[in-house]
Length: 451
Image (tube, rainbow, N blue to C red; front, side, top):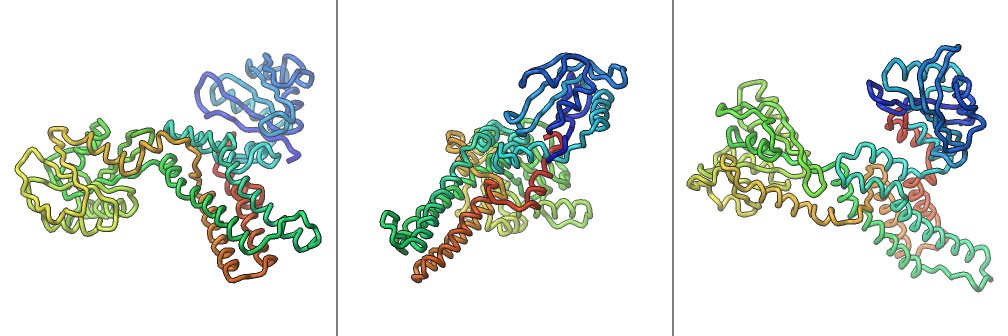
């Protein structure tokens, strides 16, 4: 990290302002070579300086240059931000000048990677920055900030500290058996302490389901035979004429999606092609996509025509959704009911009328209740939602099971210590206190270029 990196920190295009960022020991000198104004090497840290960027005496742009001196900066290195007028030509020209003067183009996420490697943030905090950038709801924003401010990291670090204390006492017991003030670690003590750690990790895992809901939203598939009202229902739910509605069977042949926010959570409704046997090749593709939604959705809304008996097609759909979370929607409740309720007794059933806009509020409330969105909305948002982090917690749970098994079999404490060290290391991978270089490359490559 001896070199100085540079990148455009804003979306490139026509705008009032664009920002070019530099980080590295030589960043102030590089910008100063082309800055007509105050001597940037002499200005105070955390100052904004007016002037011009010049190249061979030619004025390139009128700018404001912010100077931040190490170590109290985002990367703990010297950082300079050039605020120039927005526009592709101007921004690229200033970037070109910085590159020709000794900086190199930053890799995706490299500013944040330097912040991590220099101890400014840990991996949870770094990944939460990306989550904050991509957050679409107020709940997702709040959860991301819990990661950035270190609240979630503290949960993991406290558990590592507990494990380290156990390991340290085992080492003292082995190396200094005569030391009377040390706690004598026994199988009974390990059983107690490991059970406490397991309980806390399980709580984190259980609550991570809420984290994933906040981060990714809820995917709701709308299924049913042709012309049962699926597209009309989607339009009602999102209050937008997004799906084409006709009396012709097979009108919807592709996936149509619409999103609403319920209790701060993104709900993505997916209107699917009517499921039926068809000779039309294009419609067959649509039906195939409907079955794919059936497998991947968090919740399925199955529309049935209240005014007709269940058809073979209806029963086939119910059979295929047998092991999924399903809410049955009986449409056309304004008409006389002819449906056989005996076949639906195991399902949650809601009566709706798409034509008369009835039952839609009850459907939204059912979704809120099913996923406990009201509870999530009133929570403190201290959740893990990152797939990498959750996967590592699960690996830690596997190690704990191995420790418990060995402990119950009366295995020597010094052998159990080996697994305790594995557990300590694995938890360290979550925060990045232990890491592999290739893992860092993978994580930070997903960030935008100027971050």
